[in-house]
Image (tube, rainbow, N blue to C red; front, side, top):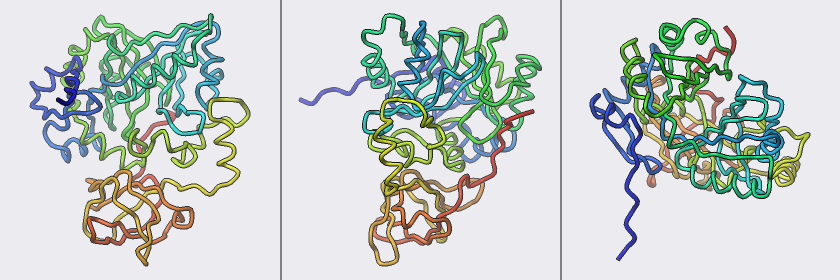
Length: 370
């Protein structure tokens, strides 16, 4: 007999999603809403108004102690010790070969206290990876908060109005990749200005017991419930990486176009491998492409040249609700990665003409400063 699959986990907002007619699907070991009113409707809401996502499946680790900053500087390619309290940083987490264990967002909560938000599908692996490197460090404590915290993402041009109405003008005036700890309806929450859609937005972290009240409050103030389907089309239009697609343990930040996250003037896990790869420069590169013919590209479709030679592989693809055409992300050989290069996507034996284009596919609506 085969081994039974572990039951899917549910976030504190599962019942709220069901009540809002959410269609549930498996995702990273969780039962999550893929859509409510429809992917196209939700995508449009985020691009033009405001949408609300349940992202409580994300993992959260607290790292504290006098050596926490030093430890994170070694664990991650970015220089975490330079963060001020109230600031955040996006960072890949690499193995010794330079591949991506995960990508994460780091919050500096206090001088010796940091919050690490990681992908749902990687919570177990990340925890054991971090624990391995933390072994023997007496001035460092790590705590897995994943089951104690919920997380919401409010995204879209109207997000600032909504968060200001609920949490006050000071929160609405947050700078990009900054956060505040405030009280909303009696709940202590952390509100940050960031997101995964390419629009202005905020992410809200709270205790699991307060998630439903906050969800209802944001919906009542004008946000539309949105599912994973729209979250994926939105991030694809921006060219954002998704772990398991653009990022894996075999893919480096350099290949993924994340070289800007690396501080080359310090030591960190994978530094030598990445430095060697950087010098050689002979690696496949992540690029965006748009189809010049009808069709929808899908992950793992081969990319070929005019002679049918394989020159890459699609990692993500969709029909863009904004552009009304097929778009995608692919790792391409160095010689095929130049902007404007014509390529072919092998769609089950049918080759569709495409063109390498600049990312993002659509203009960003992120408010980096007010």
